[in-house]
Image 1 (cartoon, rainbow, N blue to C red):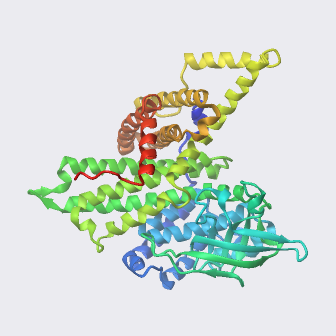
Image 2 (spheres, one colour):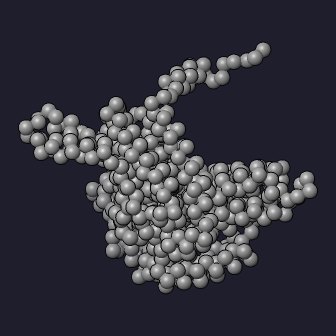
Length: 566
């Protein structure tokens, strides 16, 4: 997607839509069939929610399936599954129960993955086999009360004792998923004092249960109640140099890299829940009768089901397009994984809300599964950073490339003789941009209308990004209204690219008739996305942003809502 901010269509990353080898597909299907039978027979989501825990019996069965080894290479006793297969298994778990999906996603896609990516040979040998068997449950401790997504305010501290040659870790991480049972916690701590500057040097540490490590009481969370989210306190915990994960002072890099991978697995979990809800709703609207016919025949309900389907299809397509990039060894898919996380969470929220409307009053009572789905869905908005923060990341990551190009050209303008070659290349480039639009050539011809929508939106994003950089310069980092709109366009654009790739593969494999469902969903999604993208881009120029800021400022001064009708 970074290429789209340049107005470039990176077809080699979009086409063909990823596919597993026959051997991988057969193995995954066999695992999923076995797992599905177990989940249907043994997992009681209502009981998990009511008791706020996953039973030891279910956890033991998950070990027997080898699911604690998700994210762990085969040489260390893990499944050795790639990102696509890993995500698909988590999707199945989350469809059965959101707590199961989140617990194992945290263990495998975050805790184990951090070791696989950044661990030394000794660290991998020491911990990965135990993580793979479930002897150790993994956790990830980054966020603090004052920090949220601002790592600069982290107060957990690790001081190096030169005399003893050890680190001494102190502080509290208030929200640690798997915090009650975790035997290995990846902890991020400040390794420079708060008075040594605004930006701390963060370091990641591998912390086992030991004297000084204590879990607090489980938080009474709104949803995903089967996962224990607890505070974990560290009181002068002694750690040897071998506990450092990665390099000293490079903990932020570790955290961001791990979360990029984790977001894809979390996106699959969100889709799994959405799919389960859709399946339930389809049964409901075909069975429930009103005014002499099944309610599924009413157009207003068909509209809801169609929107749910388009949302789910887009999220599934973009999630597995991106896991395919990871499996191919593409180095940087951070922007795409952030987009998937935002889109999947918001799509699930829309799906569950539409479902609640369809079942009406029965969805409002605790005995109905939709009430639980609604509570479970809320966690996605804050799991690894808020959607608002992620939107800023998507926009600024996309703008970085065009911004660097414009800065290069601006600098050249002040030294035209020295930079004549750069300017000579830049002028024809702008002329080419004016005369032609980047083309998407590998989509199937049956999707020509949607391809034009994609091409036009790509060019519009590029022009708007360039204009925003010219208008705001370095201040773009503070222009969050602009960032939000550009990010929203990028999200819809990437979803459309994924849908086009997937539908093209379906047409090539099964023909127009066999791919009719995919074609229709792409058509519906593209039409809606085009309207949204045009609206966001239009509001870059015509908006009431300053008025909104002024209203908010006055509300702060008034300390709330100041009016009373009487």
